[in-house]
Image (cartoon, rainbow, N blue to C red):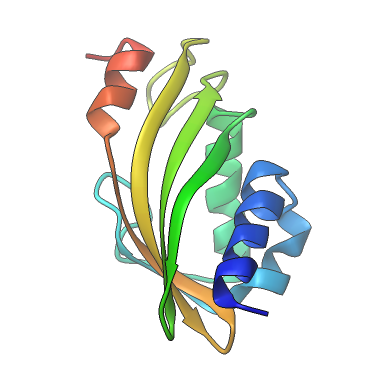
Length: 137
């Protein structure tokens, strides 16, 4: 199976369908957040349990979050994707209370692979627009 197919399944199953029980199927034992400015986990190496905690943080804040992959490029040990994220803020984000506002933003992520498992990412997206859409700016 191609890495792009693995990644598309991973995004759909683990992120869009919130199937945390499938983390071990897609994610390496050590997952590194190489670059993700503003992410609480930037620079950290996550175990499967810590990755699930990261998912909980996202799902608690945006229970209906959804990633639409708009393009993908596969290389030997990487898959780069562009995406559109949508969701409704129904839970706290750090110290910010829920706003019930919806968000829509674009971003790009490069996923790293080790032994055909997702082993980390570098990501950029428009966090400022998200903060404006939530009414924080």
